[in-house]
Every structure is written in C-alpha cells, then in structure tokens.
Image 1 (cartoon, one colour):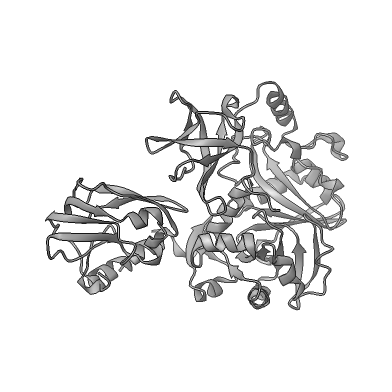
Image 2 (tube, one colour; image 1 turned 90 degrees about the horizontal axis):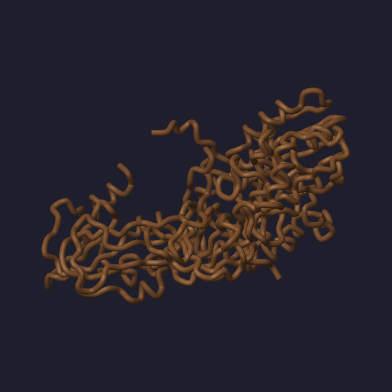
Length: 376
Length: 126
C-alpha cells in the first residue's frame, strides 16, 4: 500500500469527482484521467474546446536584478533576451548535457520570471535552480502551492475566454502571457498549451480555481466545451509531435539527441556565454552534425495494433533499429501512431520495411515526419 | 443476456451467460470496460479454437494499454462477434449486450465463478 497522505490533490478535486472523473495517480498527484470517453474529449479539443486541470505542474518564481542572468546560466535558452510578456520553451540540463526537464518560462516583468516545470521534475528543477543561484542577485521561490493551472484549449477557446475578461484576448500572441482578470479573479493569461490547438493556460490562486473553472464551463457550454483528462492530453500532444519528459526526453539524452538542438543558445549576452552543460552540449551539437544519433520520427500504423513505449522498431530483416517512446490510437487519424527513436538509416519519411515488434508480431509502420497533426 | 443477475463472472472481469444448450456467451464487464477506457482493437479467438478457463485467448487494446482477454470457461469457440471486431467501441457502449466477444461450447466451468452480487463486491475492491 502506498501512503494515501502522499497523494496530492488539486483545488479542483471535488469538482472532478462531482463530474464523475476517472482519477489516476500522476507524479504523486490524484488527477483526472478522463471524465467519459477520452476519444470524445480529444475530438472536442480538435473541433471545439476542452477544459483541463493542470494544477500538478510545478511553478517556480525568480525575482531580482539578476534573475535574467541566473536563468541564462541555469538553462539552455537565452532568457535575458525574452521580452516582458512573452514565454519560451526551454530546458534544464545537467553538466553532461542530459535533459533534467523541459520548461516553459514566462517573463512577467523585467525582474520577474515564472518557470513551469513538469510535476515529476519540479523538485529537481527547484533544487537545480537553487544550486545554480550562487553569486546571482536573484531569489528562487517555490510557488507550487501558489497556483492552480486551468487550460482551455481548442479553436473555440478564445471566444470562450473573451466572455469572461475585458483583456484583449485577440491581441495576445502565441507564447505570450500577461496578468489580468478572468471571471473577476486575478490570473496570468498565457496563450500556451500542449495540444496542438490554439488555447490558453490560466494561472490562478488555488482558492479561485473552482470559480474560474465553473465560469469557463458556463461560458463554453454553447461552444461545446467539455472537461478533459490527462489521457486525451497525452494523445493530443502526441498527434502534435510534442515531446513528453520520461518518454522522448530523459537525462540520458541531450536536446540535440531529441532533435531540439535549436533551443540551445550558445551565444548568450550574459555570464560571458557560460552556462551549465555548455561544453557537453557543444560536443553534442558537433556529434549531431557529423554522426547523427538516432532520430526522433513519427510512425503511422497500417494495421490496428497499438505500439507502446519501449516496443522495438525493426527493419525488414528483423534487426532492431529503434525504440518506441510513445504510442497511442490517434483519434484524429483513426489509426495507431507512435514516436520513436530510430537509426538514421531508416529515419527518412517513407522508408520501406519498417515495423514495430508488437508483442512478438512485426506490424508494418510508415515512417513520417512529425507532427502527425497541424492545425489548419 | 441483458440481465446481469443471470450472468456469472470471473475474477479477470469477464462475464459468461447461462449456457442452456451448452453454449455460453462471453464478454467483459462494465467495470472492466470503464477501467480500460476507449477500446480501439480487439483480438478474439478463432471459431473452432479450444479455449481454457483462466487462460488468455485474445487481447483488448485501449488508449492507454493492452490487456489480455481470459476465457472464463473451457470449451470450443463456436462464434465470434464480428461487429465488435469492426467497431471495438461497442465494448464500452454496451459491454453486456452488443459488445459481447465470443461464444463457447462449454466443456468445463471453473467452480470459482462469481454471482453478480459477489462480483460487484469483488470489483469494488472490498
């Protein structure tokens, strides 16, 4: 038995239970997996809108005159160049270049940043930022208890949000976030998400979460907004070709291995260009150029059996040429899809003879470029 | 087969209809269907195949996982539900009716099948 007190619940826990959600443990949090059919939730986000509780995500606030310099040193991105009100996808790496977490960083003010970490890695990120803060005039604050996070995602999201705020929703760019009011509650309104659709993430005080959730539910009723669990969040991000830590990303991979080398900025304006992992990442960048490691590709099934993380990818002679990192039936494509790291020799889209070993049966798969789905 | 009171249940969450002419219908329970989530692929035994109580005879794929299908009785498979092969969502929408999986000419019934009440208690984890 696991200690029940070890499982954390969000401010919306009673709301989920009242909605009849199937709950699941996710990184120590009791989270909604789905409310009804995860396929219908997925399709609602693609065609209308979905409402998500993402309060398990880990928020860390950095403030101070050298908060920007600290982030340039601690992360792989160029966060001192981030404009106030904008957001960036970046990573925290160790000295060896291995990925400790992938992050979204919002610059809330000249001397204030919000770092959003994966639930499972939030403590690692907090510890790393604190270890790396020596000598910088910056405060690192654990804000995990300070926020509930509600996402409204899908083509109808902007229209729904507009009913609840005087804020210029249309004027907010993708990967931007600003503080304003939603349903008369203070909120950081961010145009970010993990679904491949237009959408918003609303950081609110936990005590305001139920009111904001209920206001969104009411405002979205006519547009077809439905509550959505983590199950469809996973298939949405998979279709959108977005990596998930613990699947496509891990400490044994560098951003270059994951095909995300472009987020590593070697030319930084601060700290004379020094940052944690720089040397290892420079070597990884050269290796990616000269002798590319396995590449992350998409696989689309010809049959109906679903590949799962860890299944081997095999060539026509049966030799193992890669490994599936995520796989699921794609509600949008109507067939199973997967992301996999495969040898460069079979990584080109259209490569013949690639199969996934699904419990001993070699099922044919087509190699495709990511993403599987791009919004029109 | 719509009256669960007349069904028998296995601890692997299959149901089995009363076999008056020796042929029983097999499906998975509503509890199991809910736990699986949307079923997207079913692999069933073949007609004429001998299945053994408590042993795997197929599989069910859902969004999150793949689960083995266990036969709740021993015997020869006489029919499989082609509708559920074509539309696996029937397992979720009507697990006790249109989502039945296969029929088996029962040669032997295990003695540890549960009644509806016993299964409800078992499935609730009590």
